[in-house]
Image (tube, rainbow, N blue to C red; front, side, top):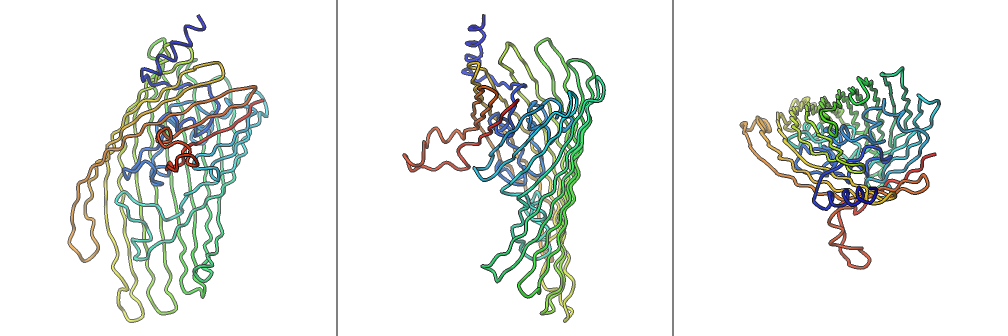
Length: 435
């Protein structure tokens, strides 16, 4: 019987059946291997706009230790474990330590280094930033080092609570531009509450808050750039048993994001300039999780994301009374339907195979996109993004290793041998240990 189940799992994967397992202890590398890339507002799945503004549905619907950032009330599920997750090359990722204070309470300590975590230089739906709206080009402003603490607990038989907070920053001096300095900070808070309605049905709610500031100063102090960020999000997820082997997993995500920049008047008398980029996102969808046999979980899903943004700029007259440059006023909308599958099947007791595929259609309606005093214009664009992912997981003596392999790597091979590089990074990995 055991062998029959094993070969059934392999056959299901070979036929392209989409599956997700709910007990693995990995982070983003596992979810990425199951087509978990974020819904992209720009039509580019690797866009930083996508990862910072629209969360991917797999972060809601796949039970994994990565969910502790979206729903920290899941922390008691992952006791006494440590992992390192490299999601954008060896230099970037997270380090997580989860320690059980009791049977029902877990402490989280984590650090993160990201390749892109901007305070103000985040594109709106139409592509403009707060800096470009003010008439100035904005420098890159990543806040790429974060440190955080979290706590989760079960309060009785049916209530789960959790929260985490992190502080990030970057102090940078660019000697190639006469010692221009950049200082930025980023504070993020997440909290959640979950209700177990029965052994198989549950509802979870999460809150996401992010605030930040960024200052850019020239070598003589002639240009200073105080910037601001405010982001607030609400998240809902449910799990409801609809059949002996199937659950429906609906979710709803709402986020408001505002970035601001103010350039002070310089020593030459050029006037101050102000820019703002605000974005509102509504995302809803559902996955269907089916577990026909042990070791296989089939999870197709579909969803719809709607994003609207406004970008505005204002220039104050200089000493001569002239407006120093034109500014931008734009409003933009995007509708993004998407659907996909994710498959995970247990090949052996120590090995799991994964496969994912998804498609999203980016429908764009850009209105009133004009640089004053030019007349308004309207553009209609669409873009289709297809993504295929592969991955695998290994378990041995408390150790977990998850790999998310870019499918192009199978054609390109090892760069040292073939000379063909794979971009983005060929392999994400997560290594963890549980005790």
